Length: 116
Length: 115
Image (cartoon, rainbow over all chains, first blue to last red; front, side):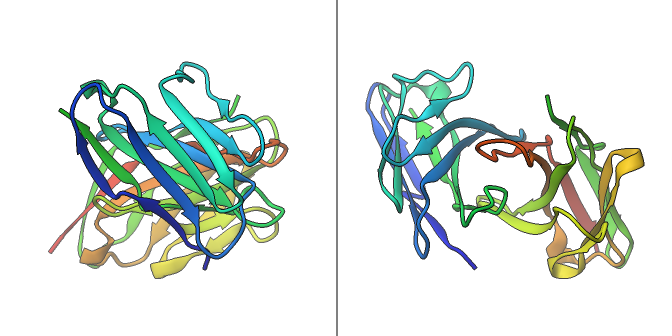
């Protein structure tokens, strides 16, 4: 099956620093990738849709300047949490659809961000 | 707007017993429906999905789900629970007419399996 990787799997940073999370589709090209955030004991909430070659589309309530998304190539999307604060601590998961059907999505293993 | 409701945030069964995780959805158009499983500190793994065709869908690890349009349900079942089935399960819906195909997730059901 298709594989999506995320790096790092776990990161701890100080408040005020920026953290970059990478999402890669390893064996297929993805013009679109999705970034989700999962709070403890909560469901996944879509944050934004990353589009290769164009600006990301953010969901309502998600700060564009805080969560910078760059879809650098057909296999790589990055999410940068700028000036991180403890309330940004969460589990961030990316997914990438493969093929013509956007409903066949493959999820990365997630990145656990802890902001001290 | 689409939505997903999973009844019961926590379900506990004995090993060997039937597993039933409930999912109801709301959608203005025929949806695509999914069940995902998440093990601790891991990403989501697709268990099964319904798009078109047969309404009884079989997935991995012995799980299956039945799409019932009249009940707007997509409940997940497994005849006999294993200890390894203990995990968080998410039901999700996608609007097949959505231009981006993003998924709307339920709040999840944590399955515990007692020996």
